[in-house]
Image (cartoon, rainbow, N blue to C red; front, side, top):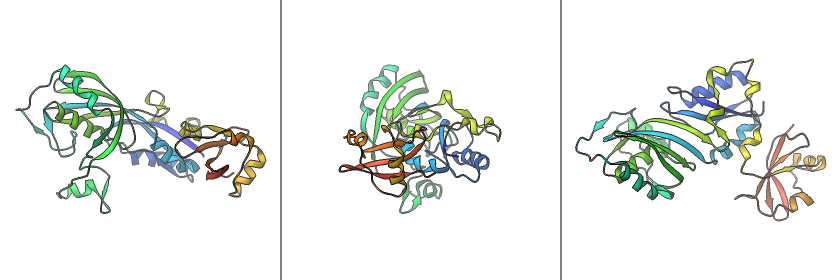
Length: 293
């Protein structure tokens, strides 16, 4: 197997639970997910199988979209309803205009302090492990990219936001910061990842549909992980060179002057099968990833 699954993760299941389900169905091929969802969250979880596990980092770089629901006037150590909740009765009740008026300050490149209960590492230890041990966890703010925020629903204390953002964004922390900007606190009560790049929740496969008779039909082409890269069809002699780790230089590749941040293209054979990712170095194209046959 060589491809991807767009799976709609149900609430209460871990991302590892979903991968384990796929792994049992695709053995001996390997499986791995491209971006953890907490058990509280639902929605798009892309699972890569076989040689496509080498595409996980490309999926992780794709823009994401979330529907996040928050309860204002309360806080918790985990920044969601999974932790012990403290009510803040003295906090003001923001109006719709208050919330909408502050959203623009969170657009673009902004600094975000990740939550203490996160998988980020501090001196080799997961932050959530340190937090569960009662240790002080203070993660440094880091830049994130937020493309859009829309207030979908507001009925105090509940606030629902439609968020488009880049990799590394913690939605619960974004809700925390938006609440602080209007003078209150917030915990996340629900989260749905509705998109990762071209993968949409409306097209995602439910976990219960994954069984031996249907698994192959749910498999997506691996190049769907590479929608950010131009596609180049290779001639047979080009492919032979790449298989042996040698660079190629053809009239087709010479016309591709600049291709993305890393100067990469997705190379396919005559049948449209992804065979390599090429990286431009000078006038030559070198294999960055080769998916052998």
